[in-house]
Image 1 (cartoon, rainbow, N blue to C red):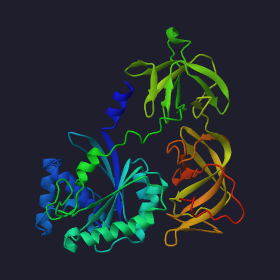
Image 2 (image 1 turned 90 degrees about the horizontal axis):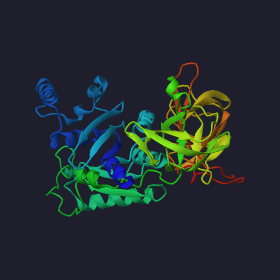
Image 3 (image 1 turned 135 degrees about the vertical axis):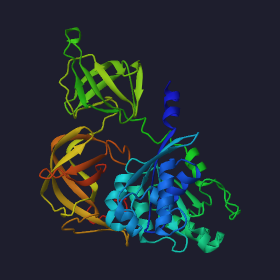
Image 4 (image 1 turned 45 degrees about the vertical axis):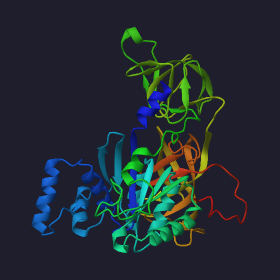
Length: 438
């Protein structure tokens, strides 16, 4: 049953696209949809009508994802566009994210749940500052798989030497990142070379086309099946007299495996019990795993509420009100020390204060700048936070779900920052954190 569930879930792949402005992100996604014949007839008719009106003559595939009027007028991606398609081998959710530096926050939003990220590089430009920025962000938010599509190969005469030079340049930078799987594919999104079918114009490339790689990349081991983590979202107490003793704890398993009979501890209270039943909509289970949504019943009556976390006593997360995190600032008003916000972490929401801004990452030098008085829009930095209620968390590099949070402005209810919690460690005087900020 466990194997069957993983195989079933592995059919869905979430991936994002990123790259510099005009590198061809939207065109690549449009080409994928067009060549796999996954476009509705009315959408195709609208694109053809638009081409006739504008005099372009041919369909602009980028318009399949660039839905905002400003995006079409300027020829750039501004917002994150989500598209859904499927092949006989796998289902896909794709997030087409902006390339411009001022929309870094949108890029992080689109890639935050991705199994795989596609970074496009213009074959004429090679690896530029924006390429490094997007690769760093993919590494920072722990996207497990990276595909570097070297696009517009038709404009460099499908040169193998150009492809190799860009690949070597990227890898020289990528050795400092935490990306375990990097694949390079030479493509022409506009003409469809190596997108769905192998291109005869690049016989020197021996790998698969992009679509086949997306269909075959193995993601079954990407989820955390080691550390059992169950944040309680809702306490189920039926009002029917027949169920007056029923108390179920509903939520999504964010890590590991839970089995009936397992001893558990509830955090932050530290009370212990054991699992008696696991309920789902489809019936009872003897075991459940990440990322299933279930109800867990315990043997003892324990005061448990939303935001508490059920874990195994032999595998505990960190529990603390003080921690450090990397953060991408998403608000026009800059972040300054001693500002108060609401922090949302798993199912727990509480107030917090940003005690200190420790550093800001410089994408040009790949170093941490300090001292820092504030973080501006789209800046990425390292901060120290104190929360009103202790949080139960893992380091983000170990679990993307229990190690992430958002900051909310209580006055406007706007999300102003997205953070990744660091593993507690002693920072020696004078030590450079340029390495572990990544």
